[in-house]
Image (cartoon, rainbow, N blue to C red; front, side, top):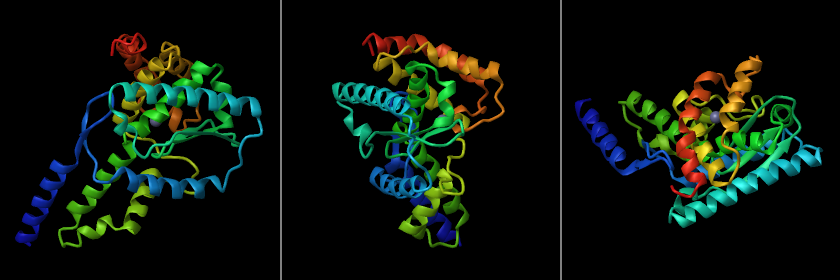
Length: 269
Ligand SMILES: [Zn+2]
């Protein structure tokens, strides 16, 4: 048993060293055990399963709006990262934007860059800038590889719990798929994603704000949207509009970041 524990410790140490990297824009260090291509392949499979249960919106005006805002954000981000020589941050992410028929006020982004808005969220988002707040937040989750980090954390919990060995089996494709689905809670019976942690939500808010700034959207709309949420005191709280962290906390956090975001807008950063 002692020897197994020592091996486990060594393996974990090597894994930590090899898989540490930093999050785009925020520079936070984190560990990712899965490759981007592994995650993307799992993401695509789940996407097709999920979308087979939904229909595209027939609202051509709103569909065009979602595409316009998404493409503007994606192009600006591409250009910015190319200029910085950091296009590898986008590896295995191919942005695509969809509006589907569903009355829930929801939106999500899969790790391979497929962003899905539900029709039910549109009444809350009255302008392209407001759409950009939610869209860039969702893109922020993908860019920060939050799904991979969540799967990594789950894998480590499983590893630590499995002192009896069979360690490498945890990374078999079948287990990868199960972990991915646990991490994302994707499935026709759910049709949405579990809320991310508070840390990931605030980080996606921050990255989203910078992407908005780079794309020339009105960054002041971001704290305003959360203020509107706080005032509306909505009882329906999907991932995109989750109340954890609280709307007020998100609003305050975004307000603190406005000055830095303005530097991205001005081309200083
Ligand atoms: Zn989120």
